[in-house]
Amino acid sequence: MTTIGALPEVIDPAGLRRLPAAELPRLAQELRDLLISSVTRTGGHLGPNLGVVELTIAVHRVFESPRDAIVWDTGHQAYVHKMLTGRRHRFGSLRQEHGLSGYPNRAESPHDIVENSHASTALSYADGLAKAAQVQRTARAVVAVIGDGAMTGGLAWEALNNIGGAPDRPVVIVLNDNGRSYSPTVGALARHLAELRAGTARGNFFRDLGLAYLGPVDGHDIPALEHALESARSLAAPVVVHCVTRKGHGYEPAETDEADCLHAVPPAPHTPTGHLVHESSRVESPERTPATGVRSASGGPKWTDVVAQELVQLAHQRQDVVAITAAMMRPTGLFDLACACPERVFDVGIAEQHAVASAAGLATAGMHPVVAVYSTFLNRAFDQMLMDVALHRLPVTFVLDRSGVTGPDGPSHHGMWDVALTNLVPGVRVAAPRDGDQLRLLLREAVAHEQGPTAVRYPKGRAGDPIPAVAHLGGADVLARPPHQSPRHVLLLTVGPLAREALEAAELLRKTGVTATVVDPRWISELDEEVVRSAGAHDLVVTVEDNAISGGFGDLVARTLRTGRVAVPLVTLGLDDDFLGMGDRDALLDQQGLTADGIAEAARAGLERGRSDAALWRPASGL
Image (tube, rainbow, N blue to C red):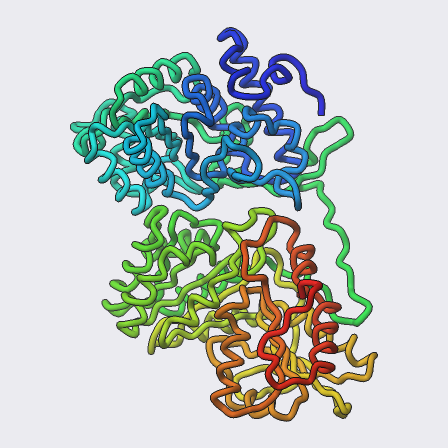
């Protein structure tokens, strides 16, 4: 990658501060060019970072990172921060396995104070850092860069309450106001910020909370930003610097991207001259069909698109169906429903806790709410799911997008805890569809359930070809059953789309003289009695899930078999009980042994062990 002009001279914040002010516009343009060329090749968050180029330059010229603490919320707007803190040369590996993280990462640099990629956390971190500075009597400045979308989160409001209540504890809140999160920011705060931008506000919310307020400031005017930030620092008090930016600034396709398609972009092909290949001219690579004959998972509709279409159909058929999103209208598939039935879709901002508690209110009033969130964001609303929905046996359906291994977003976005969390909730029913057809069916079954909460989990990407059932065991689907059992016979219980890998594993086992029955339980919060009885007729049971092992489906199967006094060895395959790194989904599944080869190898090893106390087996290879 060619670098010219100011960029080679700026390798750290100290070099940035030495750069003459006259060079800063050229630096900003070079950073913007590098963002566009890099992110469109690797994939990543483009629009948010284009909007904070000048803001980031100003922050690093006024404050001395890492001596001064700079916390980024949400972390996906920190690409320019990374470029200015010695990591510009690594952007070719952005979001790749063993490459540069798409979020702040403490292992990469001392300038990354917090590895936050869930929104609305930075102000609480800043409050704690400021308290520590006060107790330790250090002169460290504390800066939190937070977007107006993240400011809608309940945690941010709790932090503001504390920060504003301590006038002698300085925190500089850099409010990056571009009027959007994924989509336009919603609620009373968004209206108030618009009034502040227009100069028509009758009061000032931040001043009423006890914070000083500077702005609004043009977030693309470096001298104005530096002046405001210097003033904020000199106040030695809690202060909000209201910076007005434009998402995607400096790149016309991103600036005019009302659908937020360029908020985050996938890797895109380029011509030899470096220009992007237009979307309409791209040619999809052909699907590969494994030698086992199991059809590929690379085709078919996207999981989220299936949900989007089915929810519209459900809403037309049932007037009680409503939907709630926490600022993720398009990513979770609710946009189509919002177009078809706008009065029945509610965007509550980045506030998952409120989304679920509000759903409880809707259900109490006789509606059937569908709460659509990324799996990993359900973590925030666990208390509301448990105590506000489940305790009252309310019919709320949770649509858990991005469950399991998601890929390049890394640890904060892998949906690897939802099974364990929901398994703790009394009365909840959890479905894991193996393909798009099953997603439609299970979503309808979930919404039809009125005795308590339900959840439907599915991954990112495409759903692949339908996998038909050859028989049924109660409510479970039998996907493969050998006509004759060998002396060594295995039951493979699979969760969701890993059914495809299990079917391939069964074929691999057959070639080594081991027969296998493959069963998709469909509902993974309970095990059908017929499946339990069938387990006793096998020499080994293997559970396969892309969820953390502790508290997952395998643990539920172990408890169920013990309760039913079914003495059969059990091998539990899933994700390591640790934070999983970033990388391609298939590569990460391979690392975790969740491929056909890994499943077959684990089954063969489990048969050889042959011990009934093998409640959990993890070989040294990491399977």
